[in-house]
Length: 146
Length: 106
Ligand SMILES: Nc1ncnc2c1ncn2[C@@H]1O[C@H](COP(=O)(O)OP(=O)(O)O)[C@@H](O)[C@H]1O
Ligand SMILES: [Mg+2]
Image 1 (cartoon, rainbow over the protein chains, first blue to last red):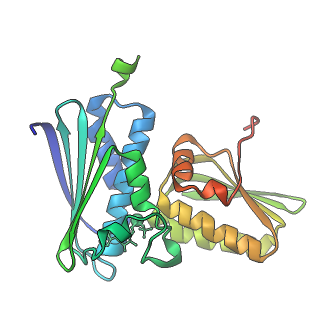
Image 2 (cartoon, rainbow over the protein chains, first blue to last red):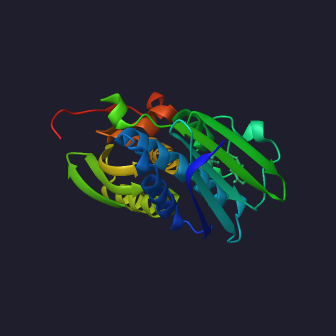
């Protein structure tokens, strides 16, 4: 697929970067003229994916997080969030609602929310090597829905 | 994020504002625990009308606080969630455990 535009961002897995990452994603998506609801959905999905890198991929250390956003044909926004952390042994289990290894500070609803706010969610992971979460969301521009 | 409060006859209302994510959640939990200890309310209302953003870290926080309130023999519910938090609440299904009220006044 041809990307009409893209950005790549790399940052350390510090929780103060959660707000930065979702705000940057919303600013990039703005060129598709999204509705307020679509902007909220994008920010939420990015916040979930980036928080997972910070909390689960690098539980005891600070590691590298890469976020790549692309605009694909048909006004589809692709969001990819990658880490080189602990990885996920059983992806199917991890994606189940309420499943968490994070204790009472986590709800186990992150993947469920990403899935329900995005059109497509793909998770690739190798234990000990890292995880990439890729999401697609087609944006109906406000102009078109008017 | 910030939490301000109003108290009247056994009911403590906590007004959330700003953004509630993992970075903010621990501090918010501590504030709410301190408020519960200080007021010992019968009812706790989480007013989310001023909350601009919340993700699943907020869901975990709400579940924890409601558990705490139940242990104290009280009731807790959510009032007036703004649009984005409302979508997260709906997607998570916690409205089956914790009532969500929308008032016309705010
Ligand atoms: N980037 C990641 N690296 C390692 N483990 C992950 C990652 N993302 C998710 N997980 C695993 O998947 C589980 C479910 O994730 P999620 O649905 O976001 O819920 P939560 O973050 O509340 O635990 C996590 O508890 C963790 O075990
Ligand atoms: Mg999560």
